[in-house]
Length: 239
Image 1 (tube, rainbow, N blue to C red):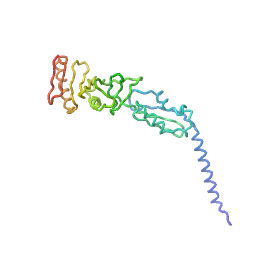
Image 2: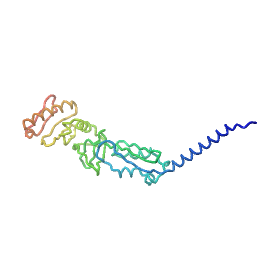
Image 3: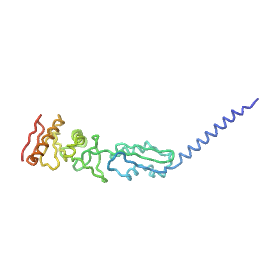
Image 4: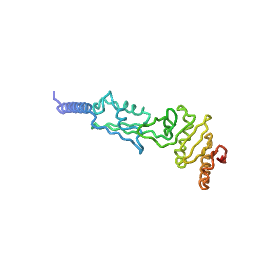
């Protein structure tokens, strides 16, 4: 019987390759995290600190640099970050060299509810806690506001965020018991009565026209109320 040496060589070579691959994988898996990088995406002041993110990443009460790569559960770590009320989205990456990187997208506050338990409303209409690290300059919200029913306040806050004139001038949103909305403007003593949010664009355009004319006439201080609830007109109450 003739021995097929080429076949034997191929089997041996295959076995060596499998052994080397298994050895390399085991060695790579046992390698510990070499470096951790935390990056905040988008230009925004940090409401959550690098130190806080690092604490959220501690696994089994050990810092990441003490944990072998093979024991890291990236899904669990991502879930821990995304569960934080300051974070909109977190992505985690681990390369073959053991370098661990985190990209954090923070929530963006657009209004601040001012009551016994103050908090922000974020750009998606959700709850966002205040930060001890940074305070956002956004309109405050007062009146009858419930954390479980932010839709109405979010609608006007989002409109303010998107409109250059409103963003520059509105400093306070007041929600009344019937869900009607009033506004206070920067350096103006009068109340702007928006009412219900139907036909909001038309009401805002009327406000802009009134403001432009009153500013030109130097008469802004003559009014205590500016009522926009009536269609196609602005009803003003003098001081």
